[in-house]
Image (cartoon, rainbow, N blue to C red; front, top):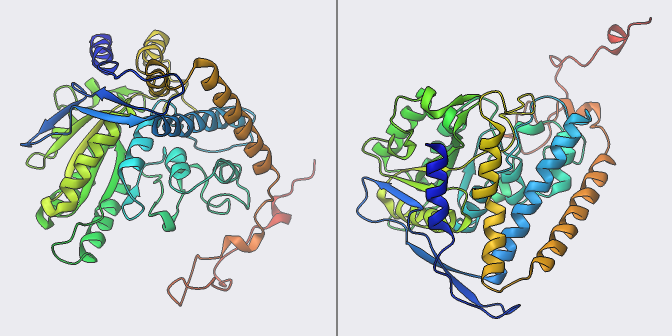
Length: 399
C-alpha cells in the first residue's frame, strides 16, 4: 500500500512543464493536480503554478543547506560533540521551505522538538544552530536551550517544544494575540502550530482546536505526517482510517498537501493563509512527508521499517531531487552547475561547524540570567538567593 501511494504521487509530480532555454531565467509552469485533498471546503488550492529559476534555485540552496546541516548534526552527535536529545529533519525540508515562502515575518510559527531547520529558515544561521547544539555561548539561545528549544522573537518564531503536542495551545494563543491586535475587518497575521502524527491524538490539540473554532482564530493546525509516531506506524496509532489528519478537526475544514513537493507546500499554504487571515477561523493541514533518520538519534529507524522502504522514498520522493529535476528539465541549469552549488554549500556548512566549535562555554552567570524578573523581563535579573550553583568540590571524585 505504501509503495502504491508513493508511485501514484510520483506520476502526478513531474508533468506539464514549459520549455526554456539553457541558462535562461525563464518562468516554468508546474502541474500540482493530485497533490491536494480537501475537507469541508468549497474551494481548493490551485492545480498549477509557476516558478522562476531564481525561486527554484533559492529553494534548492535552502533545502540543501538544511540537509547538510542535519547530516553534520548526525556526525557530531556520533562524535559526542552533541549530547542529549536530537531530532533531525532531513526528508522534510520542503515543508519548512514552502511554508516560509507562503508566510511573512508578521505570521507566527511554533513547532515541535524537530526544529533545527525551522530555526534556520526563520532568521537563523548554520553557525548559530550548531553552536546551540554544542551548548556554546554563540548559540541561538546562548547554549541554554539545546536541540529542542530554539527561539527568535524578531522573526515571530516561538521555538520548539520538548513536550509532545505542548506547542499547539501556545500556537492558538499566538493566533488569539494576532486577532486581538488586528483592527476589525483587516487581514490578520496567522499563527501556525506544527506537530507530528504521533502528537495528533493529544487531548490538548482537540481542546485548542475547539477554542480556535469558537473564537474564529487565524490558527493553522499543521500535522507533519511522516508516517511514524516514534516507532509506531500510522496504521497502529490512530483509529482514523488511513490517518487523514486533515479531517480530524471535524467541522473545522482541512487540506492535505504533498509535503515532499515544495511548490505544492507553497501554494497550499498560500491558500490556507488567505482563508484563515480573512476571518474564516482555523484550518487543519496535513503534510504528507517522510523522515530519513529515526525518530531521534537514539533510534536507528530500521527496526520498525525496512531499509528498502527508506531507499524507495529517497529514490521516488526526495524533496531536494524534485527541485533539482525542475531546474534541469526546464533547461534552467545543467547538472554540473547544480553540483557546483552543492559543493559550495558543503564547504559553507563545514566552515560554519568549525566556527561554531570555536565558541566558548557560557559563563556561570548565564544560569540565572532571565530566570527571575521584577521588571517584566526588560533587564537581566540579579542572582537570586534560592538559585543553587554547581558544587564543584562535591562533584570531584579522586581516584
